[in-house]
Image 1 (cartoon, rainbow, N blue to C red):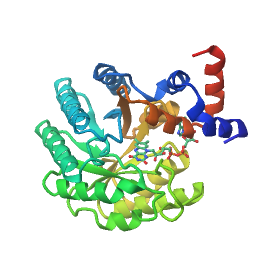
Image 2: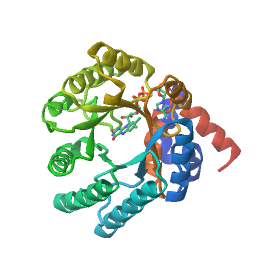
Image 3: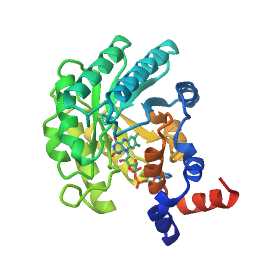
Image 4: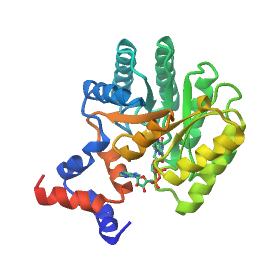
Length: 299
Ligand code: FDA
């Protein structure tokens, strides 16, 4: 990342929200479910699957968490009614993890049961390190009763190789990503190459344990390494899929689809777009160019 981008990333909290919104709009499908469903339909036309995510996190009010569960139920009904190739992704801090763990577990179970009635699947996103233990507890507990639930592991976490050993023996389904939250060195590997190394180590461990993997990355080095690893281990294409974020590397997405890879796009929507968008902008190597352009055009 160049100096200009680094300065913009540091100064993002000072950039007016309207400008952040304009630059980040490529990462978000829209404000409501209809906009998100239209994006999923478009992606399906390209041959891609999707996972729908209702934006929102760090909820401390039961009514908001309950409203989010109701929105997810509407989402699952709409996906089924339109026969779309999409599952859903949830953040436990939106579903009440910071209010009460058992309240949150109940919400997750309600959603997983609703998804099960439609033959669909729910993935729990992984948030910052303060939530990992509770997230994995809820995942293991609900997965023991409902097989249509998956979780996410972050390759930057030092604990990830150990956590893989604790996965359920049956129907484990993991999305593997690098990890996006800023974590202290005590819990997270530091350095681009180190995280890549741990990513491929974790992937090998998941594959050899028979886990279905969502290989979530736009890093061409890792996509190449992952496909080579699957080939070397004799892992068939039905045992994994590649996953990418909406608005990131659409060219790579099209190349992978044309190459016959199964690919799923993470499609977030909703009014609570700011924290998610800021995380995406921080990862964009060209953030300075886009933010400056938007500022000169005026918000
Ligand atoms: P890297 O960051 O090195 O990016 C590789 C290349 O992709 C860059 O060089 C650039 O070209 C391009 N790129 C990446 N981000 C971009 C952006 N925002 N704008 C433009 N170009 C960009 N994390 C987490 O902690 N918990 C989770 O649950 C999830 N869930 C999740 C789902 C899916 C489907 C994906 C793809 C990712 C996540 N993540 C996540 C985020 C993940 O941890 C990671 O932060 C991002 O995927 C970026 O890492 P890459 O592996 O793409 O590599």
